[in-house]
Length: 344
Image (tube, rainbow, N blue to C red):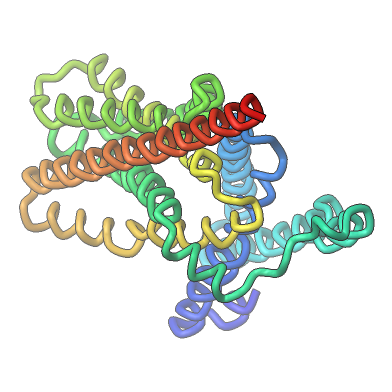
């Protein structure tokens, strides 16, 4: 609303800084903590997968509302201002709804303390935050997010790649982009969640997803201008589906790493700083490569993404190794206790 009243470059910078603080620092970790609390550890995949689906649906609805308002006010500056005002009002309305719909954690804590005062959890301390920063789980979650989010950013360059390098028409490329962005996100995210719960491991899903993306990108970057439309459609949708399956799975890594629920928001906050860091440089980097090297710049882009997804696959393997090690340690502990009881 402030930007509408004072649409200057300075206010725009202040606005984006405010978005960073309010969205990524305050809203995002709290959102993930709330979603995680909605299901037990056996159903984390589904709950996060459907979360991504509903986020995608909300984006479609909000985008449609903005477009309607923009068109209604005949476009231009007035249309932009009107759409910003409408989105601001909708944000306020949903904030009020969340206030009444979501349970107050402090009230729940007080009720829990009344029932079982000895089991109440202590408040977070500086030592807790330091442990979160030092924990391998935090950085492994961040790398898991990074690989998939980087791939999502790379997908946005498929449209110019098809038109400029492969010679596909703008109309076809645009239609494929819509199907890739909206169709695959609505299918892939819940499918990723379902698969995660099915195999009881987000890292196993991410391992297969990252390897699949690497293979498909290697095929795509070696296609020529004579490539059939059908091949492009299949490859694009397959890559997009794999990416969004991964997106529906990566939040569940936090449960697989056995991060305590009271640390969820803080852990995700730090992991997200790494996971979504491609926003800081990847578009600039890709733009530089494409402007300087033209078609070869797209090859650089694909090579970069192949390396990142390779790193994502290695991250998934490390998570599995840590998980298996903890399970073996836990099993040995149980065996020892059983032996001790038997001896007694």
